[in-house]
Image 1 (cartoon, rainbow, N blue to C red):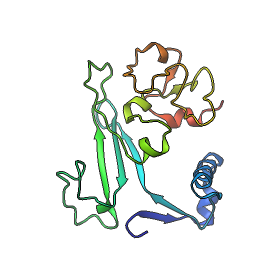
Image 2: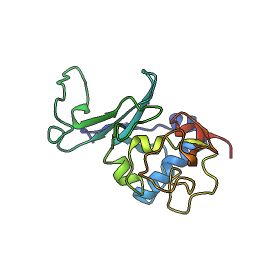
Image 3: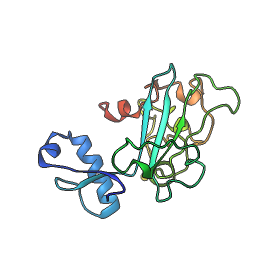
Image 4: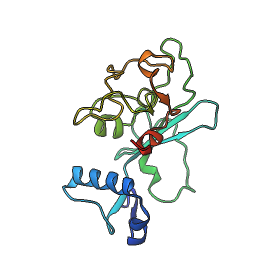
Length: 187
């Protein structure tokens, strides 16, 4: 555990979570361990996405834990950060800056997190291809069992290069790459 960033959830913290947060944590825990999540359990950062808008378009960063953090293409040119306390030397980072509003050809930056896109998602994708689909209502038909919210019948080709002008996105009120808005909206 010391090689990961982790936090033990207290009863007070658990009580402060809304029902949607509790449902997500319990579903993930049940899927991985066959039991519900609760106070006394640990949140462990294995992988995460960070979306920021410090530039006019979204910057999509993704970090993940690695047992070989100094090996491979994502370890190249890593800065030495001795002031970074804790387990951060075990994490790698990839980014997809400057997602264009109207991409031209194959110019989209691609960022893929091996834990999120290759494990949690039922099919391979990348940050941009998933987040460009974020909108309300989430889809014209609910996803089939085992499908994620981005696997919508409206845009069936998951690796298709979509733009805001793509026909399958036209019925949606787009939520600027943010799934949390769609996920938390009343249905």
